[in-house]
Image 1 (cartoon, rainbow, N blue to C red):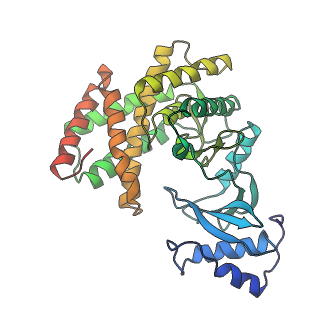
Image 2 (image 1 turned 135 degrees about the horizontal axis):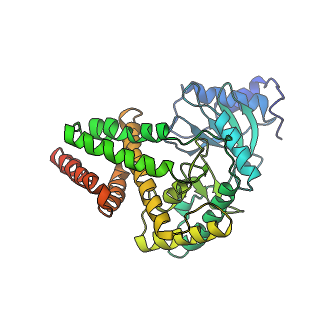
Image 3 (image 1 turned 45 degrees about the vertical axis):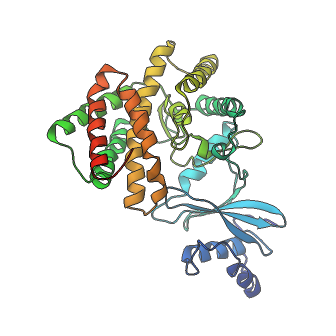
Amino acid sequence: MLKSHKTRRKATTATISTIATTAIGSALSATDIRLAQLHAWLAQSCFKRAFTLAPASADASFRRYFRVTIDGKTFIAMDAPPPQEDCRPFVQVAALMREARLNVPQVIAQDIERGFLLLSDLGTTTYLNGFTADNPDSLFSDAIDALILWQIASRPGALPPYDAALLQREVDLFPEWYVGKHLQTSFTPMQQAVFTATSKMLIDAASAQPKVYVHRDYMPRKLMMSTPNPGVLDFQDAVYGPITYDVASLFRDAFVSWPEVRELDWTIRYWERAKAAGLPVNADFGAFWRDLEWMGLQRHIKVLGIFARIYYRDGKPHYLKDTPRFIQYARRVATRYRELGPLANLLDELEGRAQQIGYTF
């Protein structure tokens, strides 16, 4: 039986003992202090009877998720250790998304100071794991409808701005972490000039777009196959910014690629529905497509830096293997537009560097 997060009941020694010895997988250390604290919080604040925990999913950040099972029902416990993480944006954005009629986890209990949340469970199958040969059109149709609901609900001041300063900090991750740490080199003065000029063009183009709520990671790995479909996860970094950002994230994903003809078809479907819903998309689809491609390029440059940082700073190697996908995305866009030609040449030079030192794209 669940209890309100305001209730504080001291767990019995027997209950604590039962919980503390719960098997949760060999990947977790017996000396995991945060996990012991999470156990105790769940026992004292949420449940009256013994429960089990199992790892639910990994995250690129410091957050961890565990599936809690009690009496055949499941919940999700989030461990977001302060000061690296802050649960408050998650709680705030979850409320905004529920107001917009999206299917997001309900916050059942919370301890913001210690970084613990108990959430409803949206299931175990992400879009990424649930794709078959026959269902992408249907799944993406649902994702487009949910995205439009989210964007329609937008209002200034509710979320942090996705402004030029933040966009610049993101692209600066590329020379610091991907070029510097991963490729073990640095830009020549000419390369730096190319990167600086290209970054300014991309940021200026993004800043000129109409502004809406932006999930900031709206991709198949963060969407769950559920009823109603999709369930939406990991929205705590949401901002108020360019209207094409989440569309680019959805169809040019970090972990799965699609033929460009399908990207184009799904983008047209979004654009038509967005226009019908009254969203401020460019009336010229060609101009909208260009905005999306340039916005996507900014994201791809950023993610290359992020994936390298996750490996070299945080010791999580499995993200780095997907960097070739982002190089391919970036080169495809850079070679398509005359203004971005110098960036295409820069990427070719970096590819040669990677091959020289044993990295492959």
